[in-house]
Structure formats: structure tokens, C-alpha cells
Image (cartoon, rainbow, N blue to C red; front, side, top):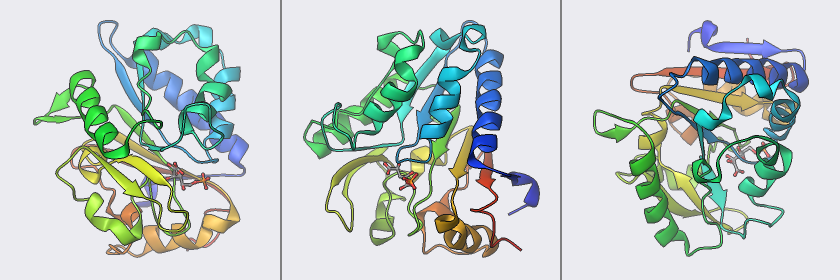
Length: 242
Ligand code: 6PG
């Protein structure tokens, strides 16, 4: 991976500050007639980013042009503490003037495989296509210590190569049901950003970034066909990079 695809920050706070400005700039570049399709990552890492967005000069950004999606969701109700939607809504969505119709949450309370089908259709109908496939303007991804991303886990690599846009899967350790974007939809994005922080991620970051052909991990398969891939790391997560 070329080094210029990687930016390293002194702290998670500096990373979030950079990504907030970067994101607002991308949204503001969107043509007035168009929409900016953004898929959010889940877990705990993006919480600091969402807080920065909530505290940013949001009035200068036309959030009405943004369509919000998720890269994955835990199959729990939207008010559950595990819900990726619940976290994003609490931390920033509720403070922005994004029309309700432009927030496309995954229905964690629904039956998983049926919801994977429904969400695939939602994406099909609301994200601009390229070469016949919905192409997100930006997909934010996190990275698990086991090399998973979104909810594509190493024990289920087939869901990366699925022909479907979304899959219903099971977390290998907790058994929690999830709905996730597939690798096909991830790699069709215009821009993919991995946001990774913390010392506990240093080992997997080093394995994925430094060993070119490491297909043991779903995150190592993320490589946009006709787009850009950017790794944003804090110093701790980057501490094992040569
Ligand atoms: C999820 C995420 C998942 C997450 C990684 C990292 O729903 O959990 O989408 O892919 O990004 O597990 O999680 P942390 O940010 O909590 O370390």
C-alpha cells in the first residue's frame, strides 16, 4: 500500500478533527442538485468523530444534501445500547438538519435476512449507480482486532465476495446477529476511509497494511475498484508500522 494512502495523527482527537473538516468539505463540494451518500461505521471508534461533527460549524454545511446509511448494524432495537444507529443519533444526527427521509437506518429490530434484502433495495433505490452497482460517495470503516470490518468476519469471508449487496451474518464470538454491507458494495465506493485508533489495533493494522497479500482478513480485501482508499490512524494504532 502506498504510504500516501495513510495519514497518522498524534491523537484520536486530532484524527477526528481532520476527518470532520475533510467530510464537511466533501459534502460542500456536492452539486446543489446532488446528494452525498455516506455510510457510517459502527463500534466505539467513530464516537469521537460524531462528537466533532456535532460541535462543528455545521450551519455552514448543507446537511440536507446528505443521505446517511450504515455499513453494518447489530440486530437490536434502535434504542438499544449496542445499536450503531442509536450511537450516531445520540452523538450527532439529532443535532443536524438532515431530513428524516434521508436517514436510512438498518432495522436492527427486524428479522436479519429479510432486513438484509430490504436494505439492499433501499441502497439500490437511493445511491447513485456506477457500472450497475450502487456507488457510495464515502464509506467509513472501522477495524476489529481480528481483521474484520463492517460485520464481515474472518470466519465468514464468503460474505465479502457475496453477490448480494447486504448479508445477514453472526458475530463469531458473541453470536449476535448482524446485517452488513458486502465487499461488493464496499469496494464499489468512490472513497473508503478506515478510521482506526488505539494501541490494541497496532498489530492488525501492521499486518494488514504491511503484508501486501494478506487475504486472511476481510479488511485486507477492501480495495475500491475505481475509487480511493485512505487509512486514518492515530499514533498508537500506527505504532507497529515500519
Ligand atoms: C461494528 C462495526 C465494526 C467496528 C469494529 C471496530 O458494528 O462493531 O462496524 O466493524 O468498526 O469492530 O470497533 P471499535 O471501534 O469498537 O474498536
